[in-house]
Image (cartoon, rainbow, N blue to C red; front, side):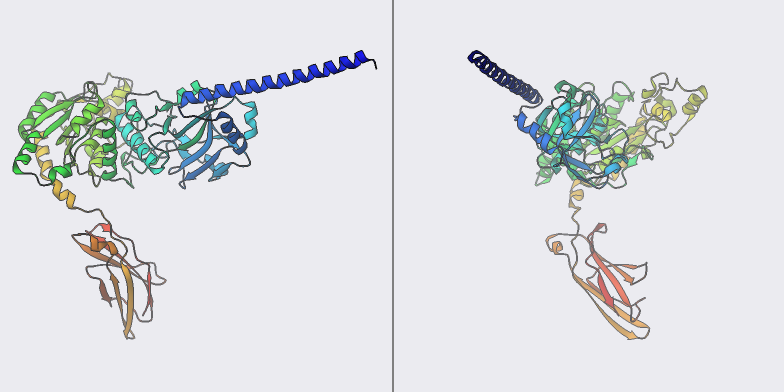
Length: 593
């Protein structure tokens, strides 16, 4: 081989090596540029810093991880690491790797009917959450993910156009879900996946976090694949007290777990966010002089909610004058259409009474001070006993609100609107016979949610309030209003277990025996002032299905009736405060006569 050929071969090899190195450097530079671009996109979602390469590597190597609380889809909340959302498919994606975690691992039961409810409205088929599954290796063939470094709470708002739904279904559950998990703090980001726009009350959702909430539609702006580094999915249902009639006619939930104390803490927190302060009622009650009490009396006022489009009070001015004369108080009006929400809360938070037609605006009664009255007006043919979200709220232990309802019973005092759209009570689209039946009806029968035309026709009526009957109902209702001081005395503290339960037996004759049961008082009773303390004792013959219950005032008792010799009895004992505050049963006693 000639020297020239050798030199040419070496030159070709060097050039090839340089080209290969240049190509690799170009690829690496392109990858870095892409990662920089994705990092910038991630920072458009959040100001938090994220190492894009580390996040991508974590997703590729470890996949998605999920751990949930709750046994059923109706009470489940799940925490995810690297849960992703594909805006193109409008689906969440769980990426599997050897390091993935999925607890509970339900298999196909995850689709019966869903992993969890995204809303606090229980088991509604428009609120279900699930995800698709892919191997982490599929990431190679997908758009580069944008990472959201914020801790997020992913949920559905149920009906963000309606103030009652905003508070009852969204704000309260979200607030206490965030309290349930320590990392869902003021820096967490809320992500709303139901698909609605902001709605008229979006500023209220902004109060829950210092970061702007994200809407489903906005996720498209950040890329085709978004991955939430840490997220919680679902809402606690512990704070809801009302069901809207999807399965059975609407009414209070069968098992209400929230009290007025938790709702008042939530209201106080929102008021602080809105820069609203008020003197606590408890402070007002302590040690006031007669002059101060007289001044407080003069400062009391009544609030009337004014509506400007539907469900009008046709003689509102006359109603205001009647209230002022009856109670010798100022009467002020508020309107959601004309005033900011914080200014309305500021007024309501100091009112002695809130008067309003039935409607979503009455949810603001949760901002009333303790001892205030809620007066709800119902149009003709609408039975107050069948529509009770605000009565239920006012009646929760610890709300300390007094509720009164008035119903228009005079058909001539109502103005109907059959020509309006169906969603505002119009019935022109119905068959003539059905229209005539609805117009002749004097009482809306119980019904399911949500499009019953008879209900809509009647609830959107305008009403001329009959002042004499209204004042009569109000006077009677206010007679039963408890004083705030009396309401405060009532304790909601439950007794603990009775201590040192014992039993002794004796056989008197072949047909007669005695069973003596004794115990010590619950440990917490010695620190409490309780009006009435009693004890409940259950006695069951072993092997039998029935038991004999006894309510006793003392800490020991000898039973002889129905006690048989040479028989084994099971005995349970517990304490009761003030007739209805039950303690836990002590460990069962086994007693042989």
